[in-house]
Amino acid sequence: MIVCVCNRLSDRQIAASIERGAASVGSVFRDHGCRPNCGQCISHIQAAVADARDANVGEPTLAGVFA
Ligand code: FES
Image (tube, rainbow, N blue to C red; front, side, top):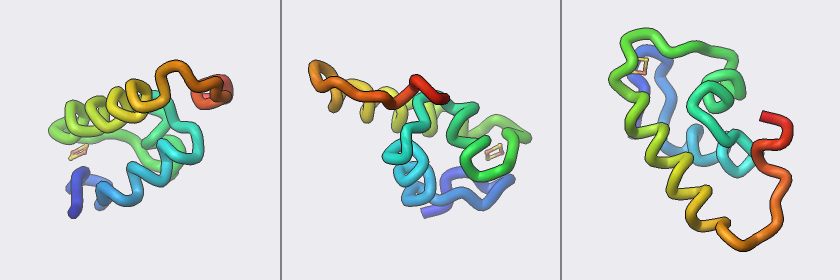
């Protein structure tokens, strides 16, 4: 499913960025070499990042160190 229409980013691409360590909306966009345009997808990407962060609570991770 396309989440970011402006950049044609799918939910799978966003999830892959998060798995690679993207810990913010900006780092998800940077991971794909693009930038937000209209901003309508921001809340969805923020929620995906927060869900991943919540799922990893208590587990040591380097995610975000390099974001
Ligand atoms: S839908 Fe993502 S910036 Fe427009």
